[in-house]
Length: 391
Image (cartoon, rainbow, N blue to C red; front, side, top):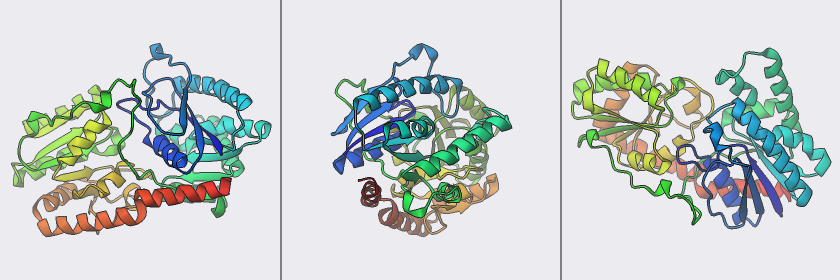
């Protein structure tokens, strides 16, 4: 069986890596599928036996591709259409596995080339237009909704990554037998090609300013919905009781880091609150592994953060906000759930730091949950079920 995976994104850039594409392709290839991966020109090649990576031109002079909808992505997706047509003319694919907006042009090409279509749905694309403030045009948002609904109904299989998206897809007419909830829950090391630049292999030295005390670690973007202001304000309260504690915030653009560093200075946190800015994923993982407590202070959202699965498997207690984005997966038996406000988060952080029995209890339960529901064995089982529908 041969398949075309279309990933409209920079495939393996040091600071923004679509691991979901890698692991989908890796496990499918292990099940005997021969795969071509079509992606943007930016990025670093990886080794996946049974897979071939094909890139459109890089267009590096146009700058990096940022998260969310953009005119640059629209331009690059035009080239993705041309490359897709070329590949379909030269190859006979059993199915085309379209990630995100690639499903729109694959939906149009499906009747011409008679392939089975798999829609890998990581978000609702009409919602993305609103969430990222790309447009307020009702006509454009409505058109995206119609395209999304048509794609969902035309696909032989629809993959969603969290219960909220699963409910949405089913409500849009996807029959249960065509739907597969496959969380992005595995995170083993990536095998880079020999000619890679090695950026991901740089050693991750903990910033000296992080000190020797108990370390609270956040990793991720610093967008407003992530609640970093809540975290920083809560840490000021934590320091009143635990002056030896340190906060390490990993991620963010220079402008975002500067803004939150100013907030930390206003709260007289000094060197106890350290911001690294963006770092390679391997470095972020190394920082997280040295934490006494991990934290996800998100204030809103519906999709489950991908890092939650790695945090469950880490053996380190997690403090997370009690919002739907988290509680689709988390309960107060596997983490310290808190309300998205500084006082509640401070209490949760202090309990995670001070209550050894509670720490051990949530860590044990988290490891059991991960092994039962989100481990590699569970992931492989779901991919096999998907392939059975497509064979």
